[in-house]
Image 1: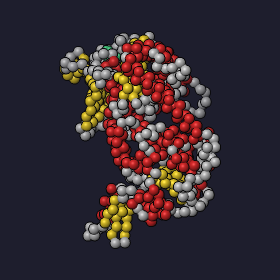
Image 2: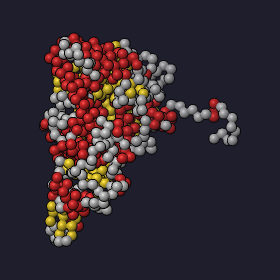
Image 3: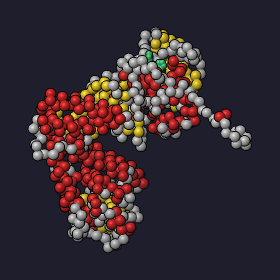
Amino acid sequence: MAGKTSSYGADQITVLEGLAAVRKRPGMYIGTTDVAGLHHLIWEIVDNAIDEAMAGYCDLIQVNVRADGGVSVCDNGRGIPVDKHKKTGKSALETVLTVLHAGGKFGEDNSGYKVSGGLHGVGVSVVNALSETLVAEVYRDGKVHEQTYSKGDAKAELKVSGETKLTGTKITFYPDKTIFDSVDFDFSTVVARMRQQAYLTRGVTIEIVDERNGDKCRFYFEGGIKSYVRHLNKSRDSIGDVVYIEQDTAEGKIEVAMQYTNSFQEQIYSFANNIHTIEGGMHVTGFKAALTRTINTYARKNDLLKEKDGNLTADDVREGLTTVISVKLKDPQFEGQTKSKLGNAEMRTAVESVFNEAFAEYLEEHPNDARGVVGKCHLAARARMAARAARDTVIRKGALEGMTLPGKLADCSSRDPSNSEVFIVEGDSAGGSAKQGRDREHQAILPLRGKILNVEQARMDKILANNEVKALIIALGVGIGEAFDLSKLRYHKVVIMTDADVDGSHIRTLLLTLFYRYFKSVVEAGHIYIAQPPLFKIWYGKKIEYVYTEAQKEKALKMFGKDVNPSVQRYKGLGEMNPDQLWDTTMDPSQRRLLKVTIEDAEAADKVFDTLMGAEVLPRKKFINAHAKKVENLDI
Ligand code: 28F
């Protein structure tokens, strides 16, 4: 460096120019250099192809995850121009690939070129900078034009390498191993993203091939986001058809697709310039405002809402609603924690007025669907009022406090929460074994009857009012709602002990959802656990092994030796174990395995709760089976 002089001049400030800046601080341009950043490279290239499709020149995009570690993306658009730029003497292709921020779509003249969010709007040059090698091929004017780059620099002049009747652009890149933590592309991540992009760009076909193993996928959605909504609702009971609204406005292009279902959950997927705005933003705010207003106006006008009734609330009109909102605008502002919230205020009013008008018209023109929709909102409103009443009764300060510990609770004798545990056990017989097998000093047992969860109890509020659940809340000691006090928790380990079958996973989901919604800080503080009962008992003579997975079983059988033929018992439920066995395998702190529940686990349970409770029996069964298997795997 410049010696010891401390004068501070422009010549001493290192100004990194161009792509060297990208290599020096990749995080600034692609967020991270972990696998997420790695995949961003693909997204950036595909975004450009999607732009070409949106401009109306391309309808096929092929993505190949190559066996040699590279990825190639090819489109059948016009091909990036290859003629030389007057000032720079470089081709448009080389300019786009080597100059940061270059690209017509970010410049002044976007001649018919649609906007793109891209990676902070930096484009393909960033991918080039972060690639060991990148090969660009352009099919244009009957020729194949080709140029190879290394770490962002052209290795040779652009050359013509052949003839072709096709047009399009193909980019093949090899991510720089010195920059990324891992250069191993995950095919399912690529597939998920491409599916989403295909939904958002109606009429484009995206083909994806994993050349490492031959896996292939192809997406084409004639209906665009309308198809997306159909897909999201395929396991739900829909009310009316998908409403689809599309309009070009001065603020940008607005598309909304939505459909009501009999479910209780709301799903909104919003996008700005094909970027998933997970945190929502102005477009979503505008949509919600218009939705509430339009439905109330329609219901009043058509006497579907009585004069004495109050308005339907924003929550009422969104229960069971699935919506995809996609806006494309010139200068998107992304805000929020993860820069995934659209900040452009003009989009709020634009979406609000477009949706307001179009949806009002839709309701007028489809009176049957309109009746179904208002009916569903009514139901939500009534349920909301009933639920509030039920919750108030349960939560009302003092309602639980004065109550004595439930009779079914076999409490421990210790009064020190830090060394007390409570086992929530499914079923009376397992409860009996647990009571006999436990360490009375430190372990309490609370049996719950298996049938606390049934289809009629679709609302958490009803479940809260259920006597079994009330007993649990009283046993925990923390109170609920406004009266909640974590310091009153009576056991620092709350262990859910259910069978490793469908009913068991059902009850576990219910309990985790309950904890997530009403006792979040108990979960966050790490007090909730899941017990891990063994799957098999293997014994020969006096030697006994308990194993928790199929793999362990195989290992144990080998360990017993080839000559002997040990006995194997598969435990179907906790109730099959005698008290000693239950203690040895599942409850004894020196031997057992417990799984600590994280807030993410509980949140995931909360999400599946709705699926479990849905009105349709078939998908629910399917789901439970899939889920039960997954839980089995998780326990390994
Ligand atoms: C594999 C990824 O990147 N496809 C692209 C085009 C087409 C044009 C273009 C792209 C022109 C001057 C910037 C062609 N003809 N796939 C892609 N297809 N970029 S990127 O133009 C870029 C601007 O500088 C294109 C006429 N206009 C535009």
